[in-house]
Each structure stands twice: as structure tokens, then as C-alpha cells.
Amino acid sequence: MRIGMRLLLGYFLIVAIAAWFVLSIFVQEVKPGVRRATEGTLNDTATLLAALAREDLLAANPQQGRLAQAFHQLNQQPLNANIGGIKKVRNEYRVYLTDARGKVVFDSSGQATGQDYSRWNDVWLTLRGQYGARSTRSDPHDEASSVMYIAAPVMDKGRIIGVLSVGKPNLAMTPVIKRSGAADPLGRRRPAGHCAVDWRRRRLVESISLSASWCAMRTR
Image (cartoon, rainbow, N blue to C red; front, top):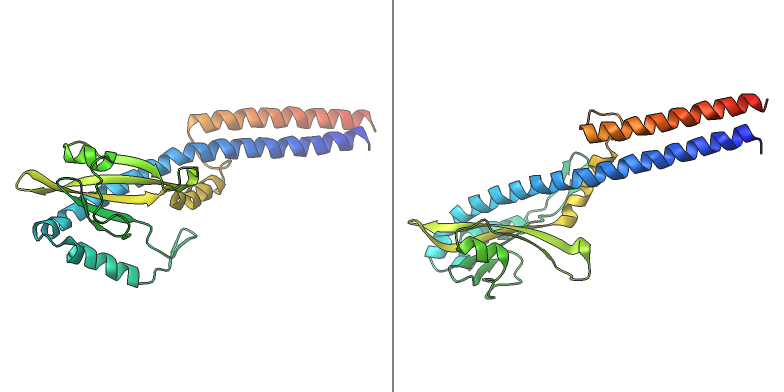
């Protein structure tokens, strides 16, 4: 194989590696932003549902309350949404409600009703008037099984009578992260860090291109 052809193949290989490198950095930087946005949404949702759950706790029958009925209807209703090319076919939230002692009195998944959740960070901190949040793996050996939980206090006359926590699997965010990373990471306006990476990539590609052209001319 002629030297010019080898250099040309090497050029395309390095361009491919550089593109993968930039894409990898872009995806890694997208992840925290997506998770922060998700945390904000979970916080808003927990605060709203905590206000609705107040009457359920005061009525001492939360498993038959408005929150339970709403989730029953939600689970019966099929979902078929297309959000920016990402298909959503099921509800991904898990919601549970505890009393003032941290005992679970309602769980939308049906897994933890009656259990003591007072030592989980989201419940423990919220019962003490702090911001309650945690990220826990449903499978200790699987990093991808992590679920983010954000809690809000259920208030009555200025006192905390319970905690409502909303959880969402981190796995549910993966399609958003991947789609964000694949959405033309080299051609859009980005922060200075991305511009610096692009500048290095362009300089590298330009130098290789000039070298390939020079060597190809020498071998003719």
C-alpha cells in the first residue's frame, strides 16, 4: 500500500477517534445537567403531592385516599407519548408516603407499605426540617439500578405530620443523556470547555491533513 493511502487511512482513523473523544466528553458533561433538572422536577412534584397527601394522612386511611386513587387510575391508563423522539409508555415515578414516625402508609409500587423508612436519608432529613434526598441502588451490584428519591414534608398547622417521597430510576434518564450527546455535539454553540476541545481537534486534524497531503505529493 502506498504511503499516501496509509496516511489517508490514518487520517480518517484519527478523525474518528477525535470525534469519539469529543462525544464522550460531551455526554459526561450532559449527565449532571440532566440529573439536576430531574432533581428539580422531583422536588416540585414531591411538594405538590405532599400538599394533596395532607388530607389522606389526617383521614388516617391513606391507602384509600385521593393519592392512592390517582395512582390506581394512572396505572390503568395506557401511556403513549413521544417526547423529542423518546417514547414513553409507562409511569416511571415511585411515590411513597410516611407518617411522622417514618412508617410507610402508602407506596405506589406496593412494595414497602408498613415498613419503617425513618432511617432512609430522604425521610430522616425531611422529618427534621431539612432537604431530604437520596440515591439508592435497587440491586447493590448494579450501578444502573440506582434510583433518585426527593422528599417533601406533609404539613398541618405548621408541624410535620409525614413525608412524601418521589423516586425516579436513573436508568430512565439514559435515553435523554444519549440523545443529548448525539445531537450534533460538534456543530452547536457550547461552553468554553467544548470549544477548547474542538479547537484542539481541529488543529490536530489540520496538521494531519497537511502532512498527508505533503507526503502524498512526495510519493507521486
